[in-house]
Length: 229
Image (tube, rainbow, N blue to C red; front, top):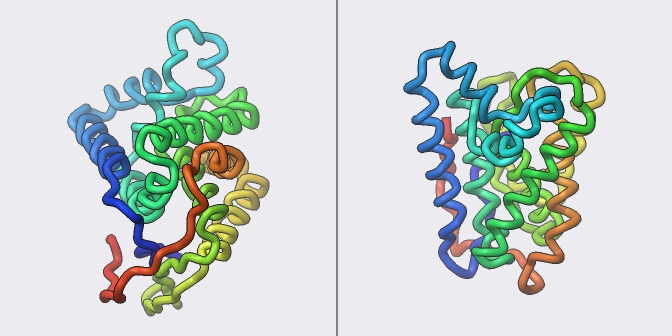
């Protein structure tokens, strides 16, 4: 299931969310100019590696932050930025810009903590904004459960169908999948427990950060959807 947009207009134009997207894109463009051996060293230096974070904390203490802005490839970046673009503006609106930045960073740190606890012996660098974005999904799940998510589903891999799914069902299904995959595929290259941790962190913190009781605001009209890829 690929989200195309949410039918939920924020009350003011987002500023922080597009800035976060721009920062992630610029950092990725900086990554791709490095040759592969140098890029591997860059991930070890700025990604979050649980094993080395313990043994070399004095040198790698900053990696829970820097790892949030690195991505492994274009699809990793595009998938994360799509979710941030769709869901982030409403959480920015609910929190206010300054508090939204703090909420985003704390969600990412919560995700990193969960990944660390589950994978203390891992020597593989974890990178990506998905932990922080999972926190945004947790907040959205709590604040806007009835908002509709315009969702693209492919049947038999090539037949596209559009559905409008309530956020509680879309995000709830997403969370259950992260939890199951974390349990059933512990050796996967995706840090599913970071997603679980980020989601739970966002769920726990959003009531402290939201300025007011939020409600979904429908858009004026529907426009033809386009798949990001």
